Image (tube, rainbow, N blue to C red):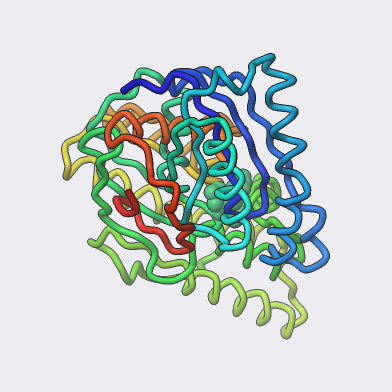
Length: 339
Ligand code: KG4
Ligand code: ZN
């Protein structure tokens, strides 16, 4: 079955997003309302507040989607929504809205895994991508390295043993007093710093595909505190650059080793941290050196959005058909689960 026109909703964290996408590729509308300002005073996302903000924003944005795309609800072939992983309150708002619309319009519905959405952001931007490929998904809640034998058929090779990559950026930014969200702030500050501070001596997970960021984060905290105690405060830009260099090295090493061992020629990067300039550059350089095609989404599709949910929903619906209307929201939903 084909589902040419998909309306998608994303509400798993602190962005309320609605999109209309044609044939899994062509973006007709891509609305994103960030709640960032509402959470800034708390230094991170407050789940209950996030859910209330989604509720305020989602219906005006759905109306805007139809006004701006000049499409009518009758034209929609499938309604998609993120059903996990994410914050339960927010997930329920988007999922329930999407199911309600599907029911009212008598259209099929599909639940989408948020991580599959991040991966599929690449397909919107790069239609030439063909499996098999390796994809590194790095966001505020996830650090997953996977092998894709086909679109939608994923084998997890490695994941973080502690903090997610984006979480580590956010925590180090907090230590440096850079505010929330920390990733973009570290990215900017790192361009003015010297990355040669020695933070950790050895890679405890060398040879595996798993990641660890908590040791690196602790090393940053200790180094900053020691500098302050000795009255020789470190330059925040040097700390940012050195932390970022170490994190990027770990991410790049695992990803390209996996690509070589699996003998694939395409490497994808996705998730909020894929917006990081040094990470993109390192992937480009490593890709050229090893003869691999490197893909990442444009900045606007790296962080949470609903166009990526439509793109993933398109693949999944064509492969497995729509989801039942009693599909639950699953905060810790795993890949390859929840059909
Ligand atoms: O994918 P996303 O929007 O939300 C989740 O699903 O988590 O990712 C947000 C994460 C945050 O931790 C943020 O600090 C990080 O992505 N991030 C970055 C950059 N832009 C966003 N991390 C490093 N460098 C960036 N330029
Ligand atoms: Zn995300």
